[in-house]
Image (cartoon, rainbow, N blue to C red):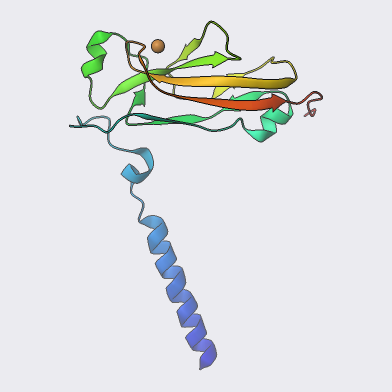
Length: 149
Ligand SMILES: [Cu+2]
């Protein structure tokens, strides 16, 4: 009897956990639909991860990022400031260089060919007129003897 009761409790707990796991909606994961304008959209935010460890161990810098309340798309110009939901792109600066490159794909940033040692990558979230809204810097070390694949 006690064994059956324990089994029932375990099954109930599993059912509850399954319900909690499936309670996340598509909106919870991907955010609001880009097809519906948002009034009073919250401020945009940039989230940048440190480089992925495995590629970095081979001397390759793969940096994932995401934006909140701003979709990264290749649309530029003053007219795009009125688009809702908000759109923009990122500027990427390596090691305080006087120049940056622009990415509007929203995909992982890849930098290869850095010499061993400490480096910094600045990621800036910008509006369609290149005005910087948010920024984050990641610092890391490229190993002197990268692991071979
Ligand atoms: Cu720009």
